[in-house]
Amino acid sequence: MVRVSIKYADDLIIVFSVIDTAREDWYYVRNDDPIPSIFDTDLNRQHTSNVDEWLQLRTRQRYSFRTLRDMAGAFREGLEATYSLSDVTERCQETAVAAKEEIFEGEHTHDFASLFWIELIDPAKMPKFLAQLRKKFDRLRESSGDDEFYELLCRLWKFCCLNCPNEVPVVEKFIKRLNRGPKEPSYKYTDTLNKDLITAVFKRVFPRPLPQYKLPEHVRERIDQLYAGRLQRSK
Image (cartoon, rainbow, N blue to C red; front, top):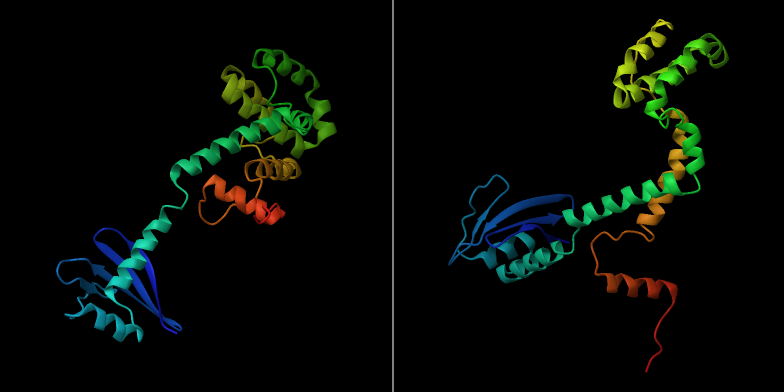
């Protein structure tokens, strides 16, 4: 069965396709007065003085230009129910706040603090910390192994770059003792905790499945009531 699908519409232009089984032909309509101009996908003008006949010939159905305009109008109304930039911005803000609260005020706060102890060092105490590290360097290297110790030093190096740049040369000397150079640290060991965080934040920001298009809050509430079986009795 042949059908028509609106792809774009504004006050002047309508873009639609005629779909016939596996074939789909796109057309462009310029709503000129008194007779609209129709172009194919390569913008070749279609020679027609009667748009209704042209549509019916292509679709083998009783389509008219009025039908096409009505469909385009419904398409534009539907676009008003799509998510806007402000909606996305609001969701991003909610996500940022929820993530912050989950990390610093939630059940995983202690886990994050344990894993990110280097990143939580007081910058004012960094010189003293590095002095202790210098004394215990060999012992810590032996107990951790070169690879793990190197990752810790790279985290320390990045922290100093951001918070106490005067100490960066000291950390770079430590890294050089491993015959390596500083690099962006990896945090693969946080994968499980990250998944837990994502799950918790997602449940807070999207307590119910997000519909494909935006609905007014009162409509969403009614839908939730229908799913939950909370219906008004018939009067």
